[in-house]
Image (tube, rainbow, N blue to C red; front, side):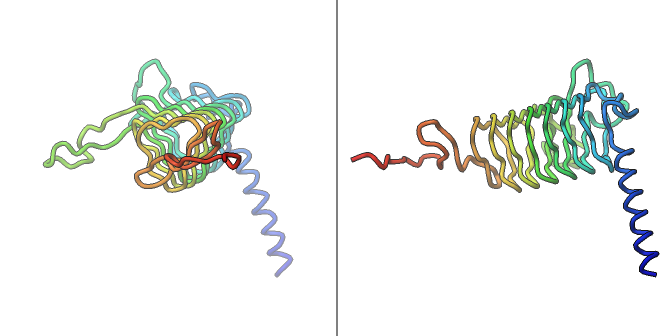
Length: 217
């Protein structure tokens, strides 16, 4: 019985490995041709999450999109969103498994951006202006999102509409981010704020903290 179990286990793992290889989306696979642009070496790992609006999605070269990542442009399949791309992901990025990237107007992720799992990024939010109409039935508002080159977004981070994050910045896991943030900062908390920043003179330091040189008399 143990021999049969081992043999069956090997078959299952080999089959799953083959499914992952054949099910991945690349520039040369049939599903890859639906994208506005899918760069050389880019790959969406199998099992693939919900993907629609590919005509308005660009993914750069050598970017890896993890398992069960959902990427969407627009409210649903079959909607004409105009001539310009909606979701743009740069080259050499790594998008963690289970993440959701939801664009309706403009959602730009720079190159060399890495995320942990289950990150949520969107440029659209529900409104609650009319207290008598269910919130889900009120027309949502869009506000562009931009994440600079070289950023790291920790697991479970949420990037809300209107957010712009500068280059080489860190978003802590679980942070809920809205607003504009400069290059070279660490953003954490709910709501998120800058907890560390970088300057050539002082290196990484907490905002508002004055560093005294050790050589000062």
